[in-house]
Amino acid sequence: MERSIADLLAAHPVFAGLALEDLALIAGCGRNTAFPPGYYLFREGARADQFFVVREGRVAVEIFVPDRGGLVVDTVDPGEVVGASWLFPPYAWEVDARCVEAVRAVALDGACLRTKCDGDPRLGYELMKRFARVLHERIQSAQLRLLDLYGTPGGR
Image (cartoon, rainbow, N blue to C red; front, side, top):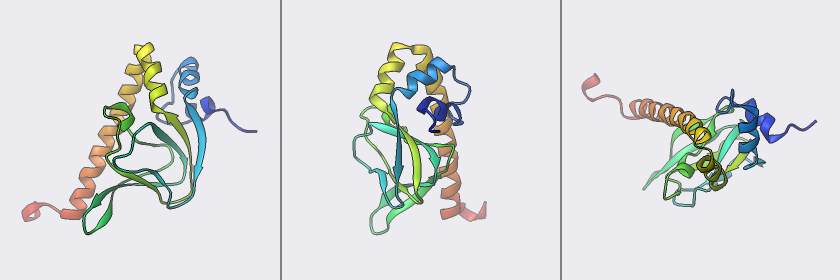
């Protein structure tokens, strides 16, 4: 038996605990997706019109470094989301996201969700708090990766 988008979101840590009517509203902007290894969910500079709730697989978040190519700055596993640029103008990706493994995800339409949040500020505030936590965790993860890559000056 196939689960509904609302059921999939309810089981996901980012959306866990939301009211059923909120999950149904959010699910109206979603669809199931699947991608093979090597597929880019999005590329730097492209329009950020959706984000992904990862259900299975792993995604590498990369920045392009001249003469080096893509540098992995974070990885996203099941139970996490990929992409926050849909929240902030100009709604353009600032990184690449590449599937390291086969990925199954719920893709959520950013414009659809922004419209619903504008109509229901309580829901918008709740989602903003949840995405702020995701962004905070990503910053911490990036800081740790940078320390791994470059160490600390003078061994401090």
